[in-house]
Image 1 (cartoon, helix red, strand yellow):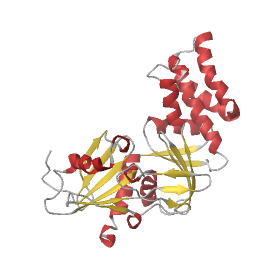
Image 2 (tube, rainbow, N blue to C red):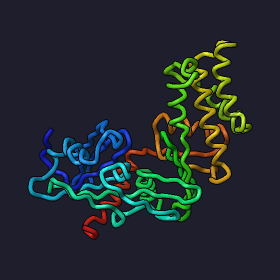
Image 3 (cartoon, one colour):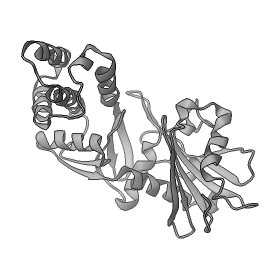
Length: 305
């Protein structure tokens, strides 16, 4: 699809499994939003540029170099070009911290933003730091806890706009593994999730998080012994994992008021879990926040190019 108006710049969020691209004009208006399933994990290094061009070739201006601001796993060691991490405590990375990629197509001026690393306990993020920057664009100098729900959920402690420390929890990946590859897959085979079972499990596991492993097998046993319905089992599994995660981070993060950078079903589950435990949480749209973070980086383009 060709566009009459050509892009002033391109914003790219390149994750492990998905690629999202926005074309924007000089006023910051979105001309096009395109997606692909060609995430970092499916590409060799020499495939990144042609993959991107399949989405934006018709948007580029012939003979004109267009800035492309990229966040996410394209900057990993296995990605397009490694963008070295910033270290905590730090503010979110800016364009001056980005890695510039040499491209075969002269219409592209690609800058990959770095992630953030933490030495003790060891942890890393890529992509989420741009969401944090987008959040701070509307909440300058913020102090408090951010939660970025996903396959690998991030909990981030902010003070005066600085990332002080963060923690990654693999609850999303554990849920996927347990529902697809463990003995529990026979018990949770339902597209629905019992919300009451979810909330009860959250409350239960935060009281005794040390019982998590036994409680997980209890889902299978309850299906065999007492005929627990699959939607109840699925809700219980999700609640146990998210509840155990909250129990694990509650001593290191202030949960009195949490900003959830997400609004999908995963974010809604965290919102429900925090609410069940008496914590206040607000949800924000992660896609728009990511774009805001990329736009913030692009706003300094002329100063560093």
